[in-house]
Image (cartoon, rainbow, N blue to C red; front, side):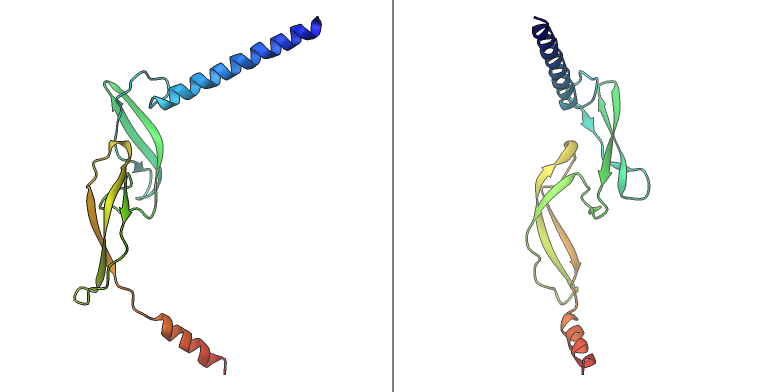
Length: 143
């Protein structure tokens, strides 16, 4: 009889814990802890120091304002922001006149309601072909 009572008490405790965890997960999914608002508008992630790393993002919903932690990758492209994710094509051939090559990206995902361009074009300088020269120098030193 005493074992049944202990078992029943343990079962009730387990049910209470799982219920509390489920409620906590529901609150996190709504957009901010302890809030009943569902239409949050989030601003860009602003790094705490320099131009990348850990920072904060401010959100508003009616008269409520929340700040959440975020992170700006240090290799992000400033022209289109860290919240706009693009699918890029392969790099094109090198343009001899400008010394650059280009590729186009199509918007894949806009995080936190960011204002993103549907397509973007990025360029980078062409790399000189110095690998062949480096290998030739290594061969001469071994004689």
